[in-house]
Image (cartoon, rainbow, N blue to C red; front, top):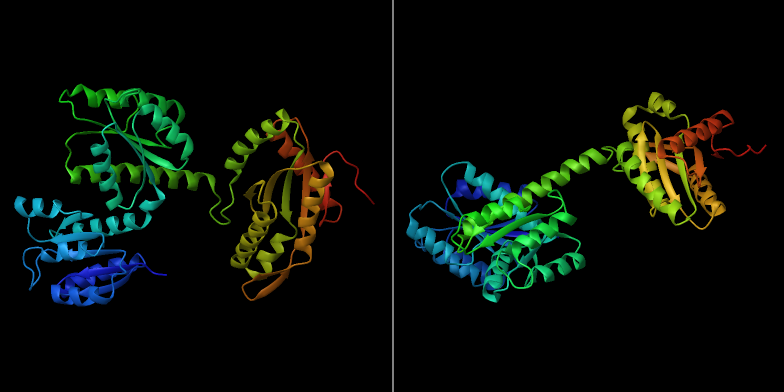
Amino acid sequence: MSQRLLVVEDSKPIATVIKQIAQSLKFEVVIASNLAQVKSILATDKNFFAATIDYALPDANDGEAISYVLSHGIPSLVMTGKMDDETRQKILAQPVIDYIPKENSQAFLYLKRILHWQQVNHNSTILVVDDSSSARRHIVELLKRRNFTVVTANNGAEALERLKDHKNIKMVITDMEMPVMGGIELTNQIRRIYTREQLAVIGISGASNGIHSARFIKNGADDFLRKPFCPEEFYCRITQNIESLNNISKIQHAANIDYLTELANRRSFFNNAERRIKEYIDKKVPYCLAVIDIDFFKRINDNYGHNIGDQVLKIIALYIRKHFGSGLTARLGGAEFAVLLHGLDVDNLYNKLDDFRREIAVSNIIAGDHSLSIALSIGAVFDSTEVISKQMNDADNALHSAKENGRNQVVVFGAELED
């Protein structure tokens, strides 16, 4: 179901631009050009995710529409052509998401950013650490206007416990002076566990001494705010740090995931497999490393085109993800995939591989307008204590044996081929 945006704007050109921006974010848009229309709409329909409100309307010239929309519990962004400090203070005195001056085209780019983050901020959990209940409440209220998920702690020691309990925390906002454990020590402890790529830390303090910001940064904080802070500055710092974390996450995803199949790529597989194999060996857990290749894949590309070939790769990747969901899976390149599995014993692991091969062999793979019969050759290594590169080489050798001996089969490295 689409989220709905109420656009309150008397300028048709501006309303049209906002509507286009909102629709690009998958919003369903309802437009009102004056306060009377707003009242008519909200009399029967209050189901809006958010609203954008023009400060000055023909029948509400002094921001009256803002308080009216807010009174219906609708998070609101204010668009204004007025730039004086009195108007700004009047807007910020109300629990708005933000205000955006109508100065130039940058205003609409900023609007799009804010609406996007309103949609996705609930996925980001922020931990607020302060021994003052009033200070905590104020920060929590500001964050919830921006749709963040928020947890709180009274001091640094309690904050470390919250971090253990909530694995999806992306940011910690911590006061400096607190009992039990202060903000500087908390930041130092956090950096022993989490990198800057995993978690952002913002220090806050009401002390006038400028050295505190430097102490926070030197102990691993990403940013600093002095109390009392302006809500605008607060939101800018929060958004900047959350965007930075998300950009890093996108870069890491691109570096570790195969662009076509969305499985792990070769580099990521090697790194993660090495760690898992060590755990399996230490705990004496039976495991196998297998390399899977699509038989005669070149013929598919030659006969049907690379687009169909790409679709086949995506479909086989979906089967791999479904069949080996608890294992580590990857596309190594071309038509070659890898899986790392653990199980009860060698027979159990072999049967998982062969069941997968059989499932593909009897399935009709629908790619475009074509129904294709696909076969797989699989080379496997069981419970090896060799390094990952040697295990991959051994699995490749077993795969080559499968190809040379008729394809559509599982061959185990070191085992005799059955007649």
